[in-house]
Image (cartoon, rainbow, N blue to C red; front, side, top):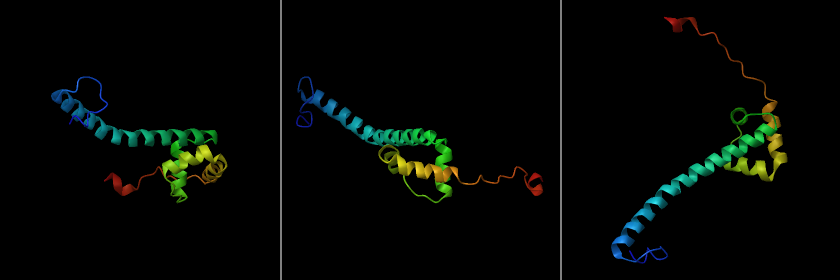
Length: 113
């Protein structure tokens, strides 16, 4: 336990070191999951900002990519938006050139009974 507490501040008493090591392990477990969440939010923010530069919202852009069967993950799209804006622009242009979906607001008659 004292070896795991090496570099911690304070007295190297076994009881204190045990508590601090346990807390450090809890934080490391929690933050490994939080790191994934934080990067996912960052990628979505970057994609949304780059899509807005081309006149699209994040959801419109992603929906258009899904309609075109483009299977690029968010990390790759975010890196493309920063490092290769020309190819991101071509993706955005292809999404914006899609025809709008035909949505019928009329429900079938049999659903009302």
